Figure 1 (cartoon, helix red, strand yellow):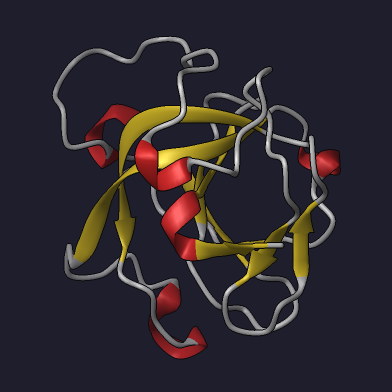
Figure 2 (tube, rainbow, N blue to C red):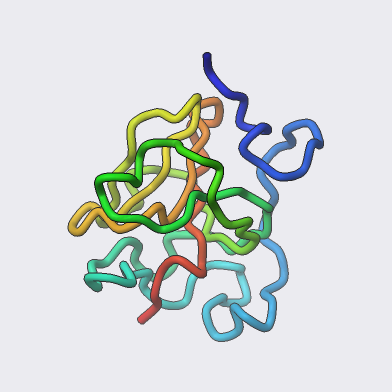
Length: 144
């Protein structure tokens, strides 16, 4: 049984189009340019692999529930509801903008993003209903 994307979000509001660029918060200061794009490269926190080049994504705020960071054996089980509500993301509109990213198996109609080199994650979220929106959580990646 496929879960709706809205069920993966804490808020019960009906799905809305992905938000446009928003003002950077204090926690993202120095990472967002005036146009709302990433100023620095986005890297895997564990292995340092480059996930996105500078300017490849737009800063956005949207509450999404991501499973807790886990090792490969348990990262894709869709498991016990253990996770974090993440609010700040890099929004990527084209999957080919990624330098290095992997996807988990479908969990309902969601795929989680992981580092393609070390498989750390999930670092982000993608709903299969929206082919043009890939969210990378700022708190789950490093910047250089």
